[in-house]
Image (cartoon, rainbow, N blue to C red):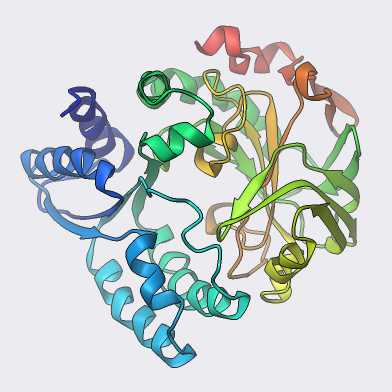
Length: 371
């Protein structure tokens, strides 16, 4: 076993979910490569006095159910999983799927049933109220998506995941404070000119306690306040479908036109899962200094330093604009010079240009100050 797994496991148990003696932690493991970190997690949780529960679940197994189940079977599946999640105090997911395209041939109808049964009934209403943390595991499939050798990617992974999150958390404080005092946001860049309000929503720091790797500060737009157009410059994958250059036209908060390179029909199927899917539930700044380019993995891509993501679908209870949906789709736009640049204004004041914060009180979040 890679000894770095023990360090990461202890960080997850003691810092990310702060497991206390007697508390129960649900460890969901996806993919055979993730079992090494899973073993280290079970050991660390037990040594901390906790009670671990482990569940092995990857798409190679779940597709056998998802491809063939009826709506009634999905509903029963969700009802079975919900009390398990209700019974625990913390949840850690280690996702190391062998093939991220294993669900690419599942029909939109069945994926809708899956999302409604699992996310609508288990994760969104129950898990998000627990202490939780979700992370990927550096297997060969993930290294291929990142277009790196497996060994090189693993070194990068542990650097990113084991950084000093306490230092990052302190540097996030001024941005979180500014967000809570801001009304109007305007984002401009290639193919993007978008305005919306974040007044009264609040701000949440993601500093190693929810995702690993971490590094974002998020809020949500006032649900019906957004107008304009946004073009995302990173690829995204959902349910095994890869899409590029997604472009949304938005009126009164609602996505009225959605286009992309790839399966445009699938894009609109995702957005039509329910009424809330065409409204936005999150707006976030990515600030992790070690993540500089996308790798078709949301948990990494949404943390890219100099990026933002604007998320169609469900809003988190911690920054709630009232939007409810089975969808929560983090799609990323990078604003560093290599990716075309861009500007973000708060109440008419420029706060970030070409991926770098320009206000002195926010400069601690720039890459040179976080590495």
